[in-house]
Length: 149
Image (cartoon, rainbow, N blue to C red; front, side, top):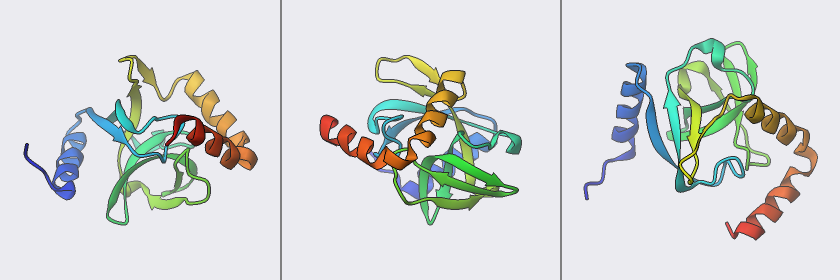
């Protein structure tokens, strides 16, 4: 097995997306729980985007402090985007549009079913999750206990 440095890997990812390619990437990490499992069993499809698509609720792959992340847009103010993972309580990232690598249009669940992140159901989920903000930390704690994350 060959190990590729993160910067080289994501440099290639950025290049391919900028050339118009859609890329399937395994999803790891708990910052987007419960929408994404983050255990590697799901795949996200990262695609090219137009700046008009970067609206609250959209999930984007982006560069932040030397790391590559995938979180949801919470608010947009011109070229500035406020980003937060669904499973994150307090931390938010403020980035600019040029930091965005691509937009996540599809999640391929562990049962191989492709789910649009831009469907009415996905938008309803996001609005409901935002509405639950005052109690979200308790819900996430219960979720993590149940699934032992």
